[in-house]
Image 1: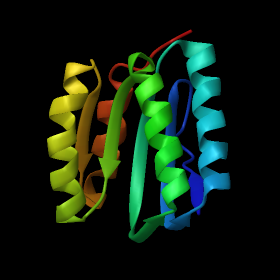
Image 2: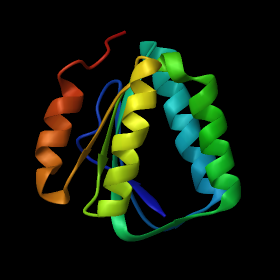
Image 3: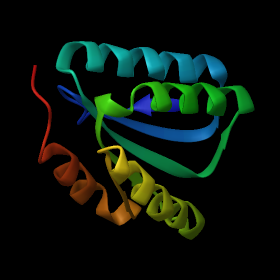
Image 4: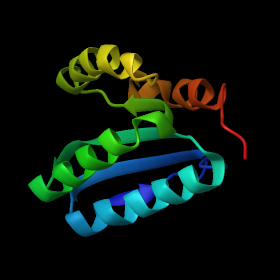
Length: 126
């Protein structure tokens, strides 16, 4: 399941994911991301991952497909988690994302405000 974070504004979408994200929920999030890209040209994302996050295989495939086809529409991605494993994956992925012009960075849950500040530094405008 997910919740839209209240600091979401303009071209920035903040989402907290907990439990298992279904394909239906992933489609809802993709629709929200498409709306931001349509309005602003580019969008940035804050993704807060709870302790026990799971994602259906279909949701992962849908997410990857959207990212690959919209790489030029993503400005920044902040992943907020205390998981050392996920943080390491973000660090590895950030190098590849940078090649596509996407800035990606991980933050601990204690650094949530810093993640928002980093995302909002270059918030796209319509």
